[in-house]
Length: 501
View (tube, rainbow, N blue to C red):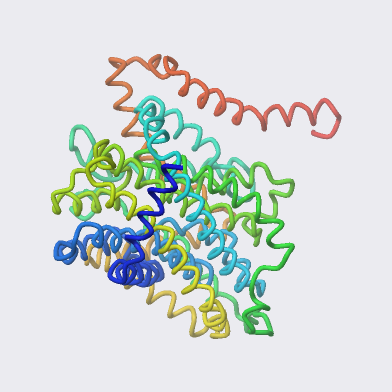
């Protein structure tokens, strides 16, 4: 009851006209930032950080937080309609959201995305209210050893995302791990696979790869179709005809629930966040589905789960910041800088020393999510109309989005070249029957694996046995081993039953 009373006090603060204004501005800017490929919440929050100094601490954090979780709403729009991830965490939305749009269900895809994000955001906010400090302490149990085992488990699941033979999927996993090593070595500082180019010293940017892999390659796939492409668009454009129906809700309910829980937990972990949460949710939904072959072809579960997970993770990432003073990802790190510039030190004493700030931020998340659902749902009808644009016009527009997005990341034409080259190579891989999803996931996990593996080995004085000293690590490694053995056991069973060769 104390938590509810405190949340009520926070709502009374967050409902002040000035606080509502900054929550609204943050929601609108976040949505716009998410739709524009390449910009991302990190750049937007960083650009507005100097402006936030002129505000009071609570208004500043409400504004910056709104941009963060608002970008997750907007980022899915471009992914669903054009297969161009508007924001890194929206990459997963391409897998099933774009096929749904091509099948005339763009309104349903956009609708379930908005509602899944809203439900997960509200649920995560209440979880912060009651369980935040407890979960934050649990997250501290994940050190380099545990996170290494978690990433290894994630890599064993990465190959299960894509379609086609498992060997091809594992080849994509290996390629993604290789690309993650490009850049300066984390320990020695030696350059690896940079070929003397200073532009590669910091490695390849995930947004650049994603735009090339999913945006440019899709333009090339569209351009090779000689016949006129009939866009599969719903004939009705009334909003009620475009929203998810009862069957859609029935299929999405459990994925939303699982995605919210998984995303909330992963959002607490350093290095986790919305991106990893959305991928993890997608893998989980495909693994437990009775019809995994539907994924990648317009399965609504493959959209509802990840969208819930990334928004829940975004909300949960404020717990380590506010309760422990530990930023779990880059965006939260920038927001932490804003707090410090206002003389507010986040940590265990924050709730006691600045209760109005803590509960005001938590309450503003409820208001911000409500604003986002009100803003985004009426726009579904407008967004769906974009599918009436002919491919001859849509393809150049997608290419322009990718070029502008790539250039805006570092203001570098080199990134534009990387997008084009990556798009051409990805097009070749797609034509050869390779799925790109395992590649991107392993690329994301590669840097985490290298960093935590090295830290773990340092803790174990170079011995790999250190990774079986933690019960959490043992559980993840054992589960990874079982995951690897399952196809072998399935093959042996087929031979025994006389089905296999």
